Image 1 (spheres, rainbow, N blue to C red):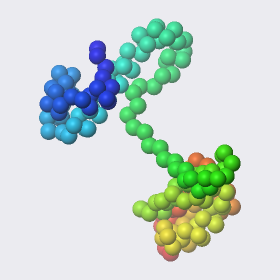
Image 2 (image 1 turned 90 degrees about the horizontal axis):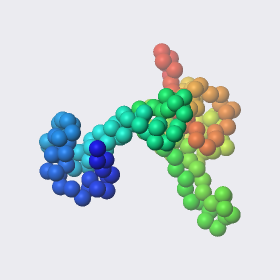
Image 3 (image 1 turned 30 degrees about the vertical axis):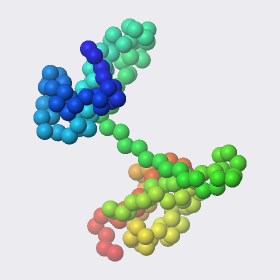
Image 4 (image 1 turned 180 degrees about the vertical axis):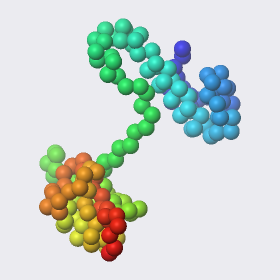
Length: 166
């Protein structure tokens, strides 16, 4: 089967892309925008490529134990990290500042708080993010102490305990 890339699909017209969807059994694309149709075709290609995992294993001579651990197609990815160039004249490795995602309810933003404690961040951002005084800090989805020092890659969230008035 011919597997297209995003670049080759982008060249085609919307009508051609919709016809490709129809011929491959992808329904519901007759009135969708071009980018959505391309995403659907790419998702179908990924499914086709990974459904023949036995053939891939034979071609690459991959041990069958490892092949059984290969997951199906990736259906969603969520990732966030931001580094800001803060000291352009500094030595290599010290030129950027990495931020941590901090949220409280619907309020969320990226802040350069690596090396700060959860308690210090709560006090510093209480007005900005509307953090309640009884909110508990959670780092990477686990309840944290106020003395925990934030590290690169952490996600900090302040959650008000259920059933507590404040």
